[in-house]
Image 1: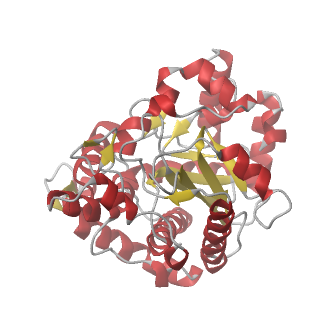
Image 2: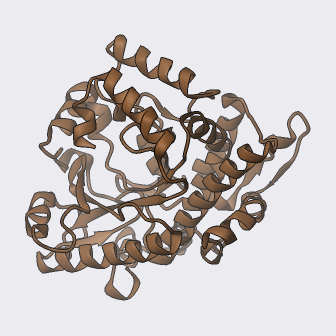
Image 3: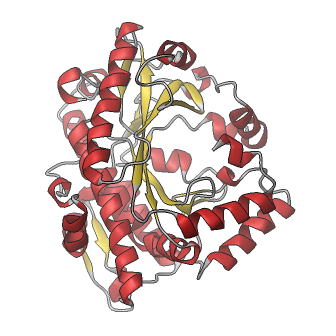
Amino acid sequence: MGEAQRLTPDEQLRLAREQFEETEDLTLAVEEEFALLDPATLGLVNRFEELQTAAAGTELEGSLVGELIASEAEVRTGRCTTFAEAAQKMGERRAQLLALADSLGIALAGTGTHPWSPWQEQRIIDTPHYRTNDEVLRYVVWRNNSFGLHVHTAVRGADRAVRVATALRNYLPELLAFSASSPFVENVYTYLHSARTEIFTRMFPRCGIPDAFDGWNAYERYVRFLYETGSITEHTQIWWSVRPHLAFPTVEIRICDGQPQLGEAHALAALLYAVTARIARALDEGEELPSCQNHLLEENFWRAIRHGMAGELIDLAAFPSVRVRPARAALEELIEWTLPVAEELGAAGYLTVPAVTPAERQIARYEAGESFEAIYADEVLEPARV
């Protein structure tokens, strides 16, 4: 990514289009972000640089990266040709990170937010990329103490990639509800299932649900406009919840909260991959896909933030007819739709609608009278459930 970001915008866009035209279809990569914790207090600790130094010469070197704050670490699977390979790599990366962190006296957790550590005490890591974001965004970036899971899926063809990303807009609320893991932040029970989404998606510019684009040329015009007006200085400042990535020939889904347990992460990553692949297949075969206006999608987006899988979602594909159903039923419908392609790609075995999401699990314990500390302690990564 670094070399690509040093290119001029013209060079970046030309190279990105070429890479989309040449890429192998439906390979994937998964990125997971984790909180770095004091094992005694479980508060956030600013120790990423130590972790990075210790990773030199290990299996984790090259797969461990910084992500904004020094109390956060991201691990990446790298490019995988099958979902089974990606799932295996996710487990390996978690185990490698956990072993390395443990050797330094650092604990790890994967919920979308930390329940109590103040954002004022978290330090922005000292890299050119994050220094730029700090200078541009100031308070907005300082508040972004959040942890997510992203899936990149390679989509062959520049026009096709933009059309896949546009179609994915329609399913972002369902994907967020499935992933919700962040009801607590700043020592407050927020009554939200995804407080992370409010912190990140609602504060950052060019974030959340993107506009619809009918192909590469329209998307490129928009990116050029941002560069030419000085709105962005690098393409990663387009922080949408789904985006064609200009350094990798992938469609990246960025909407989801981090997942505490590996099984939960596998199920979520499988769903993101399967929905992307199913949409690509639908476009290839001329199948009609929903195309909802943003103000309608925002209604479901809020429902997913507020109630997660415990609430209801509007069936926007039926609009203007009125149909509201439980979020779990919506996810069951979505999984059923993706299943034939998921089976072809080896992801079907990981697809399941959970009995409870991480957010529901945490909320139930809080409402039963348990403390943030006790609840969070059980979400911390351990070797048996990395």
